[in-house]
Length: 109
Length: 113
Image 1 (spheres, rainbow over the protein chains, first blue to last red):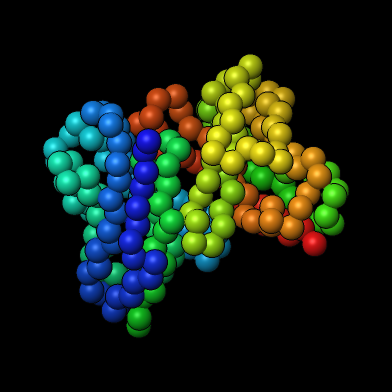
Image 2: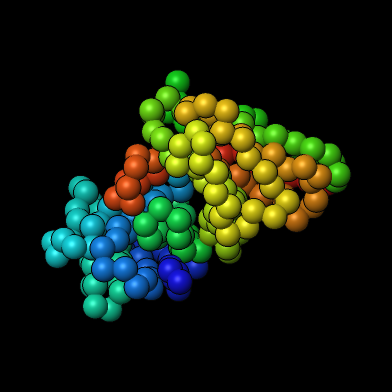
């Protein structure tokens, strides 16, 4: 079975600071893909970043980066220089089907 | 126009009614999906289709049916709506292969009273 766990239902961060959202997963596959999606209050789901399991280098997209620890099956999202527009629900996902329960991020001005 | 369009955006319906949620896409993707989102439960897969002749059940297909009318259209039906089907429903598309992330529609908020 493939599962995704987000153990932080809510997180908060001061504007301009850095925050890390946690995600762990379980799969028996050796090659897979991991994703982070953002859902702002508009409810539109937006792909933030993608990581291919066979690539050791951590993916980066502007202020968003991941810490991918394959042996530990951990895939955390780091948001640097947090902005008010980063406030949203963040979902971790494994391959195409498996989503975590989400982390609600609040950005404090 | 949006790449993935869902209609309606919001809908209130009564218990026992049949309702259809529609999804169309201009991405040219073969793969289409229906998810429901509930607070604290994340997104759960209802049905998915890898091409026009392919329909597959997801994790929570009971009480739902789908139709893939064309490559670009994938509709979700609730044959007899019940209150615990109140949720936010998302349609998504992707390219072939698990490397492709999703393109989501803007969701349909369905309330069954």
